[in-house]
Length: 458
Image (cartoon, one colour):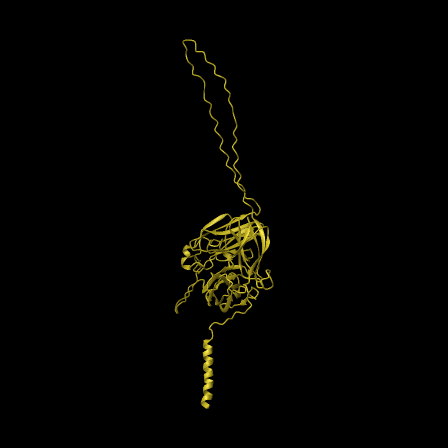
């Protein structure tokens, strides 16, 4: 009996041990709800968090916030598990909640690198596809850490510390380096194309971000764009006001066109900062082939494009009259009598040159305010209700006349996005995640985008 009493506790202990080692290695440590900027979980630096994401009934997006040291580089990595069908990506925002950069979408692994120019950043783990009404889930491990900008050799036991020299550019760095932060931003002018720029880092850093600045005045429309990209290069542009607050950004001009373009109607006089980067998407080993061009232009909204002036026709040369004076002749007999000519009549008719047709004037850009709401119609009553807004959806706006992307944004915690598009035609909005597009006519409108609940949903 005593043996039985001893065996039972031993078996219970072994069972408890076996249960403990069979438990999942990854435990969810995110704190829900954390679906908005206001609900963001605090994450230490360096830090690790475990979470889960899903796409139904509304897109589950997780926000975190972390502190950084200005001037240093940071990286966020995402290891993704689950069934392997839900795509996730990382999106980085600055302390003003302005979009900074994002990783590519993946069902296994994603990473993004960014330079810190402030002390607080937001990190979003966002489902990005596929578009389906089937419930998809994925668990993930998010790691955030600082990466070294300049490797520092460890001195030997008897070595004498060598004074640190001033940073020097790597071979091939463009003429504006160092311009890797606001204080070193290179001054540029409008109407000039700056060629042969590149992302070769300065002084041994692992990634290069190029800062520029131009002087702006109120009520003028400024447009900055990247051109002539090297094969495989994918740029993005972010603009900041004179107080270094983020205004907006653009990744691709259109889907498949990796150039970047952004327009801004200035409301102040002062410096406008332009940050051009590649978001960590270009391999460090290939930065020698990372050339691009940058051009910024300015125009007065509402001022028609001047028609080209026709070049005047050169004056017709005045003909020199021929000398019809007869050569004197000597006659030995009376000169012959001249036969009078029949009277002739000279008719002159003026022919006017028709004026060249006037070229069709390019319509002046106009500013169309839009108020967009994306909602998941859980009760299928075909109207937005409380809690049905879909947050974190990226929306693009295009000019139907030119086909160019003019702005973009992300829906807030209630599914709403407001922006003003500068267009010459109508505005076409497009939601990449949903594959939904719509043309908005007129001078502004409220647009509701409904996501229907699957049939039979409660």
